[in-house]
Length: 116
Image 1 (tube, rainbow, N blue to C red):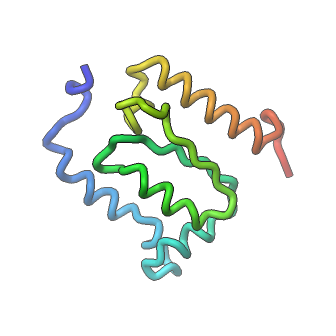
Image 2 (cartoon, rainbow, N blue to C red):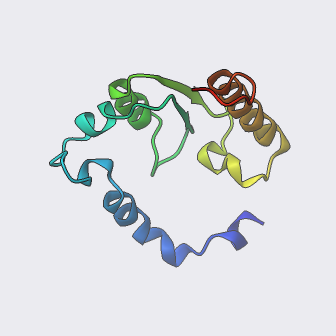
């Protein structure tokens, strides 16, 4: 089922797409990723997958150190789905993502109330 969703001919272009979306290319940061990440003022949630060759877990764990108010969570520790868990193929992963995201949003919005 999962193989029907992805077109393997597009996989080679993914690393290029990631590089073009680098936050450090934003004007004013001159390629400095830590400076760009350090400029984030919003409370931030980063969900990182495991066992992912294109998005290895150490990268977000390392780069999020520059963000002032960040909460980093490993997606369903021990699962093999990693960042693909958001695809909905495994109910346990969906439940995990919904719970962790909901908890974060409740905390930063006072349970859905708009904060000033």
